[in-house]
Length: 81
Length: 472
Image 1 (cartoon, each protein chain N blue to C red):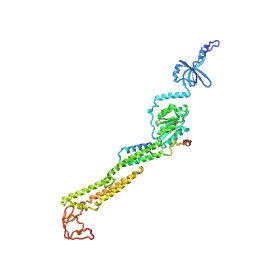
Image 2: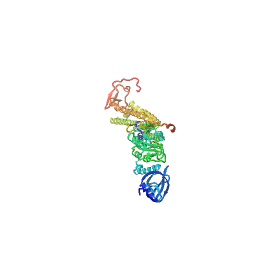
Image 3: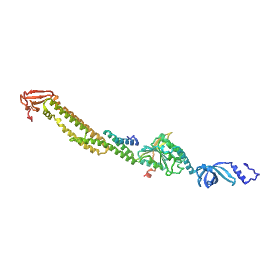
Image 4: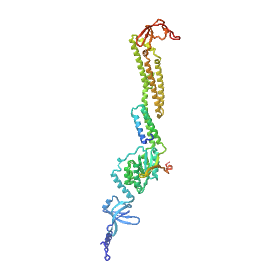
């Protein structure tokens, strides 16, 4: 589940709620979908309440190859608060 | 007239004409500030000046029409004209053939010209703008690594939606190199580092500062980008051609960050809503099960929550009815009347007699499970799933097996089935009450023996009495 993108998670969640709302499912299948949905919500919440996004700097060039390194704002902290 | 004759005395007009001829209609480009503007119907006089000097100019009506802008005092102008001398006055002047605004004014004019051109090509049409992703996983930022713009985007984006990753590509945003940097960065993301959305940001500045964002190259790079581009350049009311070409235009870098990612509180509220929907969906399913249970509960004395058990009960009732019918038919055929049938049924074995009590006990147990199930239903939804499986469905399965076993045993234990296994019913001659104690008959008494098939009429040879028999 952690390999899903946020967008994929939200899309799957929409699918599950729509299925649970409309279709006449077996109780077992309904429970399975419910369990999956609750898991997705938990994961999405976790990502949303993470301390902060990852910010990288893209370095290098097409010819020499690209890489990323962590990007930090020098003055962000005091001005941001 | 083109060469001077030192012997000759010239008229004034000839001198002026000579000077005019010497210039040979030389065409020059000159830049200066407009002053002393004197418009006439067919031409306009003005002066072009800079810090050092001033030049008289005339521009004719046709040339004015070609210029596409109106001359104003103090305006910076780049003019192309033919140098000459106005013979009647001996005045040296520039006959302006064409002119354009220079400096800030020129930039503004070029901006408008380019805007018109690109607009005609359809590059700014709303219809070709790409939608922004609802939940971008990776956002690319193209801006200078120094300055307020990068900080504004980084802070606002990471706070607003921590689920996104931000990748910054540093570029120059001012000066001659900026255009190449920006175009290369847009291409770089598109070719080698796909992201869900691109932000092109820069702090506010003069028109000249913003010039790179007003170039055809950058506009075309934005439009060629497969990744949607959001601009956050400068502050209102500055607008650049990049803004017009972008898939979404924010007026500031902060605004661009806000446009690209959703706000966490909003998404969290949406998740809460999804959670409610999920719970409601499951609840509907459980309600249906509950309804089924409710209709079973009405069938007293079985406050049994499970359809499965009810089916087993039905099977048992069927077996009982079959038993009675078989016994009755069979006995009637023998012409022995119903008394005998009731008699034999009153004596059916212990296990069959106990069955109703056992069923009731099972039903009570299921009833208490139903109470536990209702209590469980009120608990956290995400804790329920495993318990439902183990506590309800598995239990119902167990009960069904037990009841099915009891039902099959019941059929096996029919009194007639017992006879089929080789047992016999013994009565005194002409009576229907089965003998259970040897003390009930004496030596030489006549007894009837009923077998599975047929009947024997016998005489007792001897009697052995078992001591302690309660029934005499």
